[in-house]
Amino acid sequence: MDWYLAVLKKYAVFHGRARRQEYWMFVLFNFIFSIVAGFVDGLLGSVALGVIYSLAIFIPSLAVSVRRLHDTGRSGWWLLIGLIPLLGMIILLIFAAQEGDEASNEYGDNPKTSYV
Picture (cartoon, rainbow, N blue to C red):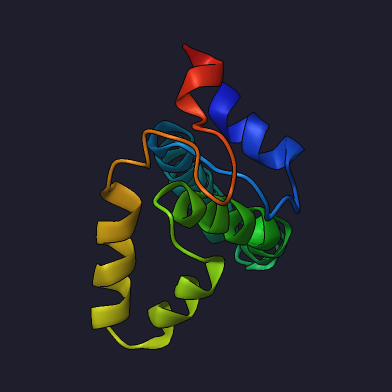
């Protein structure tokens, strides 16, 4: 949960790097909260909660994705490859699963060194 909150604290921070654990824990908790919101919406017969949650989490999702790409030495513009149906999402999944650069890169220092 701390990783999820850490991403929310960096609401619109598009510079720097995000390690794999930060990214995937955010994805996991985002998935769980989306399911809960969908369940509550189903009980209430509305879509308001899901839409509000999706809008609120959109910018932090973009920011952590850009920082994750930065950790692998790629520009945040690589997110646009996700617009290619299926293939783009597979490529982004591979990028997100890769180990980040061990040393500093043009986007900042290795984020693992600050957590260890």
